[in-house]
Length: 515
Image 1: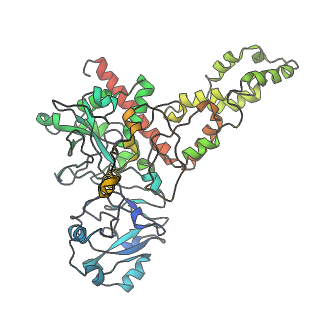
Image 2: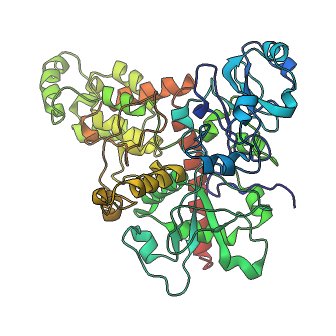
Image 3: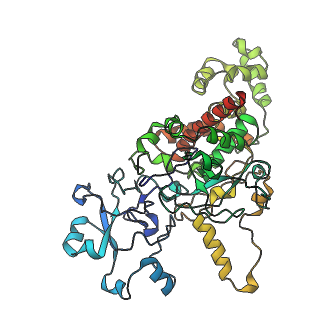
């Protein structure tokens, strides 16, 4: 078969996304998720450096065995934690670092060529992205760090699966309600999806004795269909949950798994109506096309969104009704007869809700009765026009899985293991808020551009949506989207559309008695 990728079955995007760091970023800001190439950084092996535009640089890295490391996604474990780790990971003889030192500081390509010889034997060159770097579409390339921040790209490599329950399955304390009542349970996480012809997907933590789910978009063998598991980005499942709650009033995992089982063939998967940018990038290896970075931006934890929503909070009493405005208007409206002024506020609101957001200014100019439009109108327009903006309506919080990577979970367990016995406590891998599944929303933390590894909140919704200037929210988001900001919301809108299509197909199968 050769190299063949399994993709997110919800959004259609690869899990093996790479990022090229900028000259000012640390090594941990770069990784390659294709083991055939570099591993913890994107090298220049498959790219002619003379073709790099001005601004691109390279860093000299000691060559490592590309087959011998355990990929961790975000971690560039340059310094081994022990002598044993060093020998296992790098498979290099003692004294290698002294004989063949690295040059970690980025340098112009011509300076590397002038100062160092024998690069192909002892070293590799890490590619460092300039503003106009075009290395993305090349095999072994990655997205330009100038165009997508660490905070934005967080979570793009994390894969989780829905696994069919075996006979004798018993619920555990950290299971979500749909796991307890449905036919599938959630696996642990992985930060790398191996090729179909590789060793197979390994996840952490082990859940319900599952450590290697057989993730697949396609049922290659009908006799093994009960073994296959549905792969997805953890954030994509959160979007599907919100979409199903919006449509059915509940989390409908059966619609997702039923659609997957009925369409798990190559024709259906390839012809599912995806965003054109997805189809353009989805080749044997994922093509990191410039301008399509939004495809891999975290759609749940969107940098800048919390700040925008906080700035739109009303400083006045949110309970102030339109009656105060009505009293102020009444004296004005006696001067000029306005046919809308005699209508009750409820009727005027109904009229406004039939209009488009762009028509509101014209309505305000044409009639004094509509001069002061209640905030509830703009709130309802966002819910109607932007259902994917669930910060306006949903009380369903994010699962803790959407805020973690496999590496972080492993490090947490390892850190606890290394603590003195007296300091050990029974700290659950999944916190209490996940176990209770109460759906309460908690406010997102402030943006932190300096740390891509900071733990993210379990939800990002406003505590009181009725105390928000939703007109300002609409205008600010529209302006930022037009300026290629809030790329996570653009990606969320894309995935929401895919989820709507999945739900529509599941509904069709239900009406036909197939689901």
